[in-house]
Length: 333
Image (cartoon, rainbow, N blue to C red; front, side, top):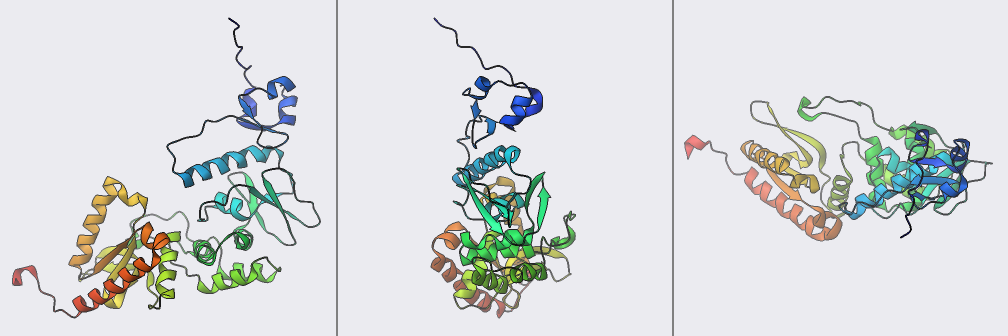
């Protein structure tokens, strides 16, 4: 029986992602760089092979794979290049739909030549601000926004704009803020929009017109747009509800204050037991304060939007009726 020799340990200083040039300088031979425990995601780059996590949801697995390729590309990334479009948005935390990370998007300023490698999509830019995030070079928030237009539909372009324009706040003062300014102001986006003829310029202008500063998530933006495009009045965003004594009750994702109706989007986090119990208490407090609440989930927003809209119409009608019913105290019953 022939014993199979384990691959020689790599120098500690290389880390999990490195260039072939770095490895050669560290004394790693060519044959070692061809061993099966190393992946070659890009020419001239090597990464320690990491098994895929089958427990991740498809969208999470897509993002995790994109992050692995980002880290693998950085050691061979030209000094003048920077991430743009969906890749910069992923790094910067901008909400995106699934299916945008088959390639890494890399930009350069004219007259540089964009990188051309399998798995990369290079792009020339005549103007671009750049920044560092977690040690990665990427387009600044406003430039990232402008480079997203070729990849997104209107609702998702508005959601990305909402995310950048959102002014951080702490409803009820319950959470200490670590950031108090938006990632970009409307003036920042208008300035970048005017500085170049961007692909998707009309979409960028439309998204900027439809964007608001109060949306906390991509689903909330979609919900607002579905409501407005369905012909209903635009709801308020991030609306604080107080009881008769002036005590903070809850913050509604979207709200019609004159109807005392809050509209909530419940994502996967709401399936957590602790969050589930919190939501029940929150609904009780809202009802005690004379408010109604409507809860929508992914099928009502990203699936059958007509059904989601129907539920909002019905909730508005119900809230209008209840608003006109004289309120009684428990002791009067």
